[in-house]
Image: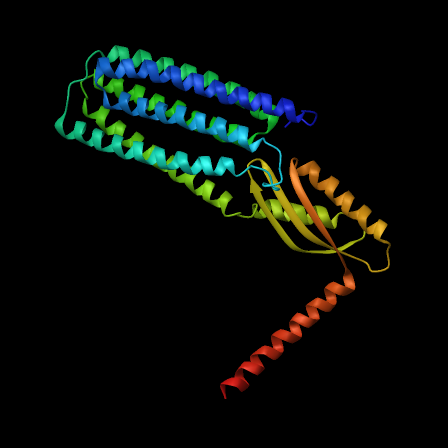
Amino acid sequence: MEKNITKEEYGRLVNRAGRAAIIAASLLIIVKLLAWIVTGSSSVLAALTDSLMDVTTSIINLWAIKIALQPADDEHRFGHGKAESLAGLAQAAFISGSAVFLMFNSISALINGHQIIASAVGIGVMIFSVLVTLALVLFQTYIVKKTGSMAIKADSLHYRTDVALNGAVLLALILAGLGWNWADGLFAIAVSFYILHGAWEIGMQSIDALMDKQLSKAEEDKIIKIAYSIKGVRGVHDLRTRQSGNTKFIQLHLELDDNQSLFDAHEKADCLEAELDKFFPHTDILIHLDPLSAVILEKENNKVQFEIEPDNISKGAS
Protein backbone atom coordinates (compact mmCIF):
# COMPACT_ATOMS: atom_id res chain seq x y z
CA MET A 1 0.00 0.00 0.00
CA GLU A 2 1.20 3.51 -0.73
CA LYS A 3 2.35 5.17 2.48
CA ASN A 4 0.82 8.61 1.84
CA ILE A 5 -2.70 7.46 1.08
CA THR A 6 -5.36 9.03 3.34
CA LYS A 7 -8.20 7.16 4.99
CA GLU A 8 -10.69 9.09 2.84
CA GLU A 9 -8.87 8.12 -0.36
CA TYR A 10 -8.63 4.52 0.85
CA GLY A 11 -12.40 4.39 1.32
CA ARG A 12 -13.05 6.01 -2.06
CA LEU A 13 -10.80 3.57 -3.95
CA VAL A 14 -12.04 0.35 -2.32
CA ASN A 15 -15.66 1.43 -2.81
CA ARG A 16 -14.93 2.18 -6.46
CA ALA A 17 -13.43 -1.32 -6.87
CA GLY A 18 -16.47 -2.86 -5.18
CA ARG A 19 -18.90 -1.06 -7.49
CA ALA A 20 -16.85 -2.04 -10.56
CA ALA A 21 -17.12 -5.71 -9.57
CA ILE A 22 -20.91 -5.44 -9.21
CA ILE A 23 -21.28 -3.76 -12.61
CA ALA A 24 -19.07 -6.32 -14.36
CA ALA A 25 -20.80 -9.31 -12.74
CA SER A 26 -24.26 -7.89 -13.57
CA LEU A 27 -23.28 -7.44 -17.21
CA LEU A 28 -22.04 -11.02 -17.40
CA ILE A 29 -25.26 -12.32 -15.84
CA ILE A 30 -27.28 -10.72 -18.65
CA VAL A 31 -25.18 -12.09 -21.52
CA LYS A 32 -24.78 -15.57 -19.97
CA LEU A 33 -28.53 -15.80 -19.31
CA LEU A 34 -29.21 -15.07 -22.98
CA ALA A 35 -26.55 -17.61 -24.02
CA TRP A 36 -28.06 -20.30 -21.77
CA ILE A 37 -31.58 -19.67 -23.14
CA VAL A 38 -30.28 -19.99 -26.69
CA THR A 39 -27.95 -22.98 -26.19
CA GLY A 40 -29.38 -24.90 -23.22
CA SER A 41 -25.78 -25.69 -22.25
CA SER A 42 -25.14 -26.99 -18.71
CA SER A 43 -21.66 -25.50 -18.71
CA VAL A 44 -23.07 -22.09 -19.64
CA LEU A 45 -25.57 -22.55 -16.79
CA ALA A 46 -22.57 -23.26 -14.56
CA ALA A 47 -20.94 -20.03 -15.66
CA LEU A 48 -24.23 -18.18 -15.15
CA THR A 49 -24.54 -19.60 -11.64
CA ASP A 50 -20.99 -18.50 -10.87
CA SER A 51 -21.78 -14.95 -12.09
CA LEU A 52 -24.91 -14.86 -9.91
CA MET A 53 -22.71 -15.77 -6.96
CA ASP A 54 -20.16 -13.18 -8.06
CA VAL A 55 -22.64 -10.31 -8.00
CA THR A 56 -24.08 -11.47 -4.66
CA THR A 57 -20.59 -11.80 -3.21
CA SER A 58 -19.56 -8.38 -4.52
CA ILE A 59 -22.69 -6.71 -3.11
CA ILE A 60 -22.10 -8.29 0.29
CA ASN A 61 -18.41 -7.40 0.04
CA LEU A 62 -19.22 -3.74 -0.73
CA TRP A 63 -21.66 -3.60 2.19
CA ALA A 64 -19.09 -5.20 4.50
CA ILE A 65 -16.39 -2.74 3.38
CA LYS A 66 -18.64 0.24 4.17
CA ILE A 67 -19.35 -1.08 7.65
CA ALA A 68 -15.74 -2.13 8.28
CA LEU A 69 -14.52 1.36 7.37
CA GLN A 70 -16.70 2.96 10.04
CA PRO A 71 -14.59 4.22 12.97
CA ALA A 72 -14.79 2.68 16.42
CA ASP A 73 -17.63 3.98 18.58
CA ASP A 74 -18.81 3.63 22.18
CA GLU A 75 -20.51 0.30 21.46
CA HIS A 76 -17.76 -1.09 19.17
CA ARG A 77 -14.47 -0.04 20.71
CA PHE A 78 -12.44 -2.36 18.48
CA GLY A 79 -14.08 -1.09 15.29
CA HIS A 80 -16.36 -2.89 12.83
CA GLY A 81 -13.84 -5.02 10.92
CA LYS A 82 -15.59 -8.32 11.65
CA ALA A 83 -18.43 -7.27 9.37
CA GLU A 84 -16.32 -8.70 6.55
CA SER A 85 -16.13 -12.07 8.29
CA LEU A 86 -19.89 -12.19 8.94
CA ALA A 87 -20.44 -11.37 5.27
CA GLY A 88 -18.05 -14.18 4.37
CA LEU A 89 -20.15 -16.75 6.24
CA ALA A 90 -23.27 -15.58 4.41
CA GLN A 91 -21.40 -15.85 1.10
CA ALA A 92 -20.23 -19.38 1.89
CA ALA A 93 -23.76 -20.56 2.70
CA PHE A 94 -25.24 -19.05 -0.46
CA ILE A 95 -22.45 -20.35 -2.68
CA SER A 96 -22.73 -23.89 -1.28
CA GLY A 97 -26.48 -24.05 -1.97
CA SER A 98 -26.01 -22.81 -5.54
CA ALA A 99 -23.22 -25.33 -6.17
CA VAL A 100 -25.34 -28.28 -4.97
CA PHE A 101 -28.23 -27.18 -7.22
CA LEU A 102 -25.87 -26.89 -10.17
CA MET A 103 -24.36 -30.32 -9.50
CA PHE A 104 -27.75 -32.09 -9.57
CA ASN A 105 -28.73 -30.25 -12.74
CA SER A 106 -25.44 -31.20 -14.41
CA ILE A 107 -25.68 -34.87 -13.39
CA SER A 108 -29.20 -35.01 -14.85
CA ALA A 109 -27.96 -33.46 -18.10
CA LEU A 110 -25.05 -35.91 -18.27
CA ILE A 111 -27.25 -38.98 -17.67
CA ASN A 112 -30.17 -38.01 -19.88
CA GLY A 113 -28.10 -36.30 -22.54
CA HIS A 114 -29.23 -33.35 -24.65
CA GLN A 115 -28.20 -31.68 -27.87
CA ILE A 116 -26.57 -28.25 -27.53
CA ILE A 117 -27.71 -25.78 -30.16
CA ALA A 118 -26.19 -22.55 -31.40
CA SER A 119 -22.87 -23.31 -29.69
CA ALA A 120 -21.27 -20.38 -31.53
CA VAL A 121 -23.41 -18.04 -29.42
CA GLY A 122 -22.15 -19.64 -26.21
CA ILE A 123 -18.55 -19.51 -27.43
CA GLY A 124 -18.87 -15.80 -28.26
CA VAL A 125 -20.41 -15.05 -24.87
CA MET A 126 -17.66 -16.92 -23.00
CA ILE A 127 -14.93 -15.08 -24.95
CA PHE A 128 -16.63 -11.81 -23.99
CA SER A 129 -16.81 -13.01 -20.35
CA VAL A 130 -13.09 -13.77 -20.26
CA LEU A 131 -12.24 -10.29 -21.60
CA VAL A 132 -14.55 -8.47 -19.15
CA THR A 133 -13.23 -10.49 -16.19
CA LEU A 134 -9.63 -9.80 -17.19
CA ALA A 135 -10.35 -6.05 -17.35
CA LEU A 136 -11.92 -6.18 -13.87
CA VAL A 137 -8.95 -8.11 -12.43
CA LEU A 138 -6.49 -5.54 -13.82
CA PHE A 139 -8.48 -2.70 -12.25
CA GLN A 140 -8.71 -4.52 -8.89
CA THR A 141 -4.96 -5.21 -8.97
CA TYR A 142 -4.36 -1.47 -9.38
CA ILE A 143 -6.63 -0.72 -6.39
CA VAL A 144 -4.92 -3.35 -4.23
CA LYS A 145 -1.50 -1.83 -5.01
CA LYS A 146 -2.82 1.60 -4.00
CA THR A 147 -4.67 0.56 -0.84
CA GLY A 148 -3.52 -2.89 0.28
CA SER A 149 -7.18 -3.75 0.98
CA MET A 150 -7.55 -7.40 1.98
CA ALA A 151 -11.23 -7.42 0.97
CA ILE A 152 -10.51 -6.26 -2.58
CA LYS A 153 -7.50 -8.58 -2.75
CA ALA A 154 -9.71 -11.56 -1.88
CA ASP A 155 -12.36 -10.43 -4.37
CA SER A 156 -9.68 -10.05 -7.05
CA LEU A 157 -8.40 -13.57 -6.36
CA HIS A 158 -11.93 -14.87 -6.84
CA TYR A 159 -12.26 -13.16 -10.23
CA ARG A 160 -8.81 -14.42 -11.26
CA THR A 161 -10.05 -17.97 -10.84
CA ASP A 162 -13.16 -16.99 -12.82
CA VAL A 163 -10.92 -16.34 -15.82
CA ALA A 164 -9.84 -19.99 -15.69
CA LEU A 165 -13.41 -21.14 -15.03
CA ASN A 166 -14.79 -19.25 -18.04
CA GLY A 167 -11.94 -20.67 -20.12
CA ALA A 168 -12.96 -24.20 -19.07
CA VAL A 169 -16.57 -23.54 -20.06
CA LEU A 170 -15.35 -22.17 -23.40
CA LEU A 171 -13.43 -25.40 -23.99
CA ALA A 172 -16.50 -27.48 -23.09
CA LEU A 173 -18.61 -25.61 -25.64
CA ILE A 174 -15.97 -26.08 -28.35
CA LEU A 175 -15.88 -29.85 -27.65
CA ALA A 176 -19.68 -30.01 -27.61
CA GLY A 177 -19.71 -28.21 -30.95
CA LEU A 178 -17.52 -31.02 -32.29
CA GLY A 179 -20.12 -33.55 -31.20
CA TRP A 180 -18.77 -34.42 -27.75
CA ASN A 181 -21.92 -33.39 -25.87
CA TRP A 182 -20.86 -35.33 -22.76
CA ALA A 183 -18.14 -32.70 -22.19
CA ASP A 184 -20.76 -30.06 -21.40
CA GLY A 185 -22.28 -31.87 -18.41
CA LEU A 186 -18.91 -33.17 -17.21
CA PHE A 187 -17.34 -29.70 -17.18
CA ALA A 188 -20.40 -28.31 -15.36
CA ILE A 189 -19.98 -30.92 -12.60
CA ALA A 190 -16.29 -29.99 -12.32
CA VAL A 191 -17.28 -26.32 -12.00
CA SER A 192 -19.72 -27.15 -9.18
CA PHE A 193 -16.92 -28.89 -7.24
CA TYR A 194 -14.71 -25.84 -7.81
CA ILE A 195 -17.48 -23.60 -6.44
CA LEU A 196 -17.90 -25.81 -3.35
CA HIS A 197 -14.15 -25.65 -2.73
CA GLY A 198 -14.28 -21.85 -2.89
CA ALA A 199 -17.21 -21.77 -0.47
CA TRP A 200 -15.28 -23.97 1.97
CA GLU A 201 -12.26 -21.64 1.88
CA ILE A 202 -14.38 -18.52 2.36
CA GLY A 203 -16.24 -20.13 5.26
CA MET A 204 -13.08 -21.31 7.04
CA GLN A 205 -11.35 -17.93 6.65
CA SER A 206 -14.42 -16.19 8.06
CA ILE A 207 -14.63 -18.57 11.03
CA ASP A 208 -10.91 -18.11 11.75
CA ALA A 209 -11.36 -14.32 11.85
CA LEU A 210 -14.48 -14.50 14.04
CA MET A 211 -12.69 -16.88 16.42
CA ASP A 212 -9.73 -14.45 16.66
CA LYS A 213 -7.19 -16.80 15.13
CA GLN A 214 -3.65 -15.55 15.71
CA LEU A 215 -1.52 -14.14 12.92
CA SER A 216 0.80 -16.49 11.06
CA LYS A 217 3.93 -17.79 12.80
CA ALA A 218 6.10 -15.81 10.35
CA GLU A 219 4.30 -12.59 11.32
CA GLU A 220 4.58 -13.30 15.06
CA ASP A 221 8.28 -14.16 14.69
CA LYS A 222 8.73 -10.84 12.88
CA ILE A 223 7.03 -8.99 15.75
CA ILE A 224 9.33 -10.60 18.32
CA LYS A 225 12.40 -9.89 16.18
CA ILE A 226 11.43 -6.21 15.89
CA ALA A 227 10.87 -6.00 19.65
CA TYR A 228 14.35 -7.36 20.40
CA SER A 229 15.85 -4.87 17.95
CA ILE A 230 14.87 -2.01 20.28
CA LYS A 231 17.83 -1.06 22.46
CA GLY A 232 17.25 -1.92 26.12
CA VAL A 233 14.59 -4.58 25.58
CA ARG A 234 15.45 -7.62 27.73
CA GLY A 235 12.57 -9.88 26.78
CA VAL A 236 9.08 -10.30 25.32
CA HIS A 237 6.22 -12.44 26.58
CA ASP A 238 2.43 -12.88 26.39
CA LEU A 239 2.31 -11.97 22.69
CA ARG A 240 -1.28 -12.01 21.46
CA THR A 241 -2.36 -11.27 17.90
CA ARG A 242 -5.50 -11.36 15.79
CA GLN A 243 -7.05 -9.69 12.76
CA SER A 244 -10.43 -8.05 12.23
CA GLY A 245 -11.17 -6.87 8.71
CA ASN A 246 -8.08 -5.08 7.45
CA THR A 247 -6.94 -4.21 10.99
CA LYS A 248 -4.39 -6.31 12.86
CA PHE A 249 -4.24 -6.29 16.67
CA ILE A 250 -0.95 -6.81 18.51
CA GLN A 251 -0.61 -7.07 22.29
CA LEU A 252 2.60 -7.93 24.13
CA HIS A 253 4.53 -7.51 27.39
CA LEU A 254 7.92 -5.81 27.11
CA GLU A 255 10.58 -6.69 29.69
CA LEU A 256 12.86 -3.78 30.64
CA ASP A 257 15.57 -3.08 33.24
CA ASP A 258 14.33 -1.94 36.65
CA ASN A 259 16.65 1.06 37.01
CA GLN A 260 15.16 3.39 34.41
CA SER A 261 12.59 6.12 34.56
CA LEU A 262 9.02 5.68 33.47
CA PHE A 263 9.71 8.25 30.77
CA ASP A 264 12.58 6.17 29.30
CA ALA A 265 10.45 3.00 29.39
CA HIS A 266 7.63 4.85 27.66
CA GLU A 267 10.04 6.04 24.95
CA LYS A 268 11.10 2.45 24.24
CA ALA A 269 7.47 1.42 23.88
CA ASP A 270 6.84 4.31 21.47
CA CYS A 271 9.90 3.32 19.46
CA LEU A 272 8.70 -0.27 19.21
CA GLU A 273 5.23 0.87 18.16
CA ALA A 274 6.73 3.03 15.40
CA GLU A 275 8.86 0.14 14.12
CA LEU A 276 5.92 -2.27 14.14
CA ASP A 277 3.81 0.24 12.24
CA LYS A 278 6.35 0.21 9.39
CA PHE A 279 5.83 -3.51 8.80
CA PHE A 280 2.19 -3.79 9.95
CA PRO A 281 0.31 -0.63 8.88
CA HIS A 282 -3.25 -0.01 10.14
CA THR A 283 -2.48 -2.04 13.29
CA ASP A 284 -3.86 -1.55 16.79
CA ILE A 285 -0.89 -2.03 19.17
CA LEU A 286 -1.02 -2.40 22.94
CA ILE A 287 2.27 -2.70 24.88
CA HIS A 288 2.51 -3.50 28.59
CA LEU A 289 5.79 -2.59 30.33
CA ASP A 290 7.23 -5.04 32.88
CA PRO A 291 10.32 -4.57 35.09
CA LEU A 292 12.67 -7.50 34.53
CA SER A 293 12.85 -8.44 38.22
CA ALA A 294 9.06 -8.77 38.43
CA VAL A 295 9.07 -11.14 35.45
CA ILE A 296 11.82 -13.30 37.01
CA LEU A 297 9.97 -13.38 40.34
CA GLU A 298 6.72 -14.38 38.67
CA LYS A 299 8.45 -17.23 36.81
CA GLU A 300 10.00 -18.50 40.06
CA ASN A 301 6.64 -18.38 41.86
CA ASN A 302 4.97 -20.30 39.03
CA LYS A 303 7.74 -22.90 39.15
CA VAL A 304 7.39 -23.36 42.93
CA GLN A 305 3.59 -23.60 42.62
CA PHE A 306 3.93 -26.24 39.90
CA GLU A 307 6.29 -28.31 42.09
CA ILE A 308 4.07 -28.09 45.21
CA GLU A 309 0.68 -28.85 43.61
CA PRO A 310 1.47 -32.46 42.51
CA ASP A 311 2.72 -33.22 46.04
CA ASN A 312 -0.51 -31.87 47.58
CA ILE A 313 -2.59 -33.91 45.16
CA SER A 314 -0.76 -37.15 46.07
CA LYS A 315 -1.25 -36.46 49.81
CA GLY A 316 -4.95 -35.81 49.31
CA ALA A 317 -5.32 -39.06 47.40
CA SER A 318 -3.69 -41.05 50.22
